[in-house]
Length: 136
Image 1 (tube, rainbow, N blue to C red):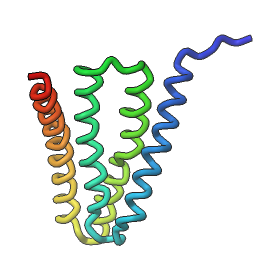
Image 2 (image 1 turned 180 degrees about the vertical axis):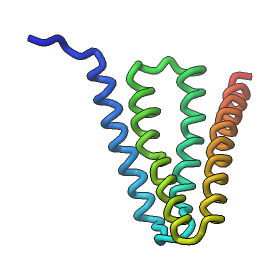
Image 3 (image 1 turned 90 degrees about the vertical axis):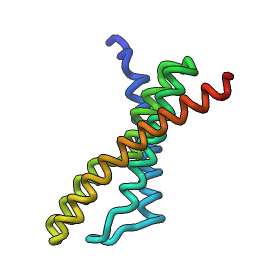
């Protein structure tokens, strides 16, 4: 008999979370579709929202709550990893460039990067402020 893989539960919760996150992203794309050469607002919003949630989540699980060992891989890696979509972001840029909209593609590239980083930073900052206010 083989030995049980100690990483099995981690892999399982990442996969389950990834399915949930990807389904949520797909739902957003169905609700707010983008035309082939249109500006990919849905992907931008999904990525920025996902980054903001990552910021809140990381503060909560590292500074407030001693979460079960599978929470971070399930929600952080699985759900939020499946929800955010930097591969679609790359394809969106390629489509815009190939559709003679290189300036728009470049603007989208920079806007997504700046907005995603700002979302994480702002969410971490705001979460820490709210937690400090609640503790005072």
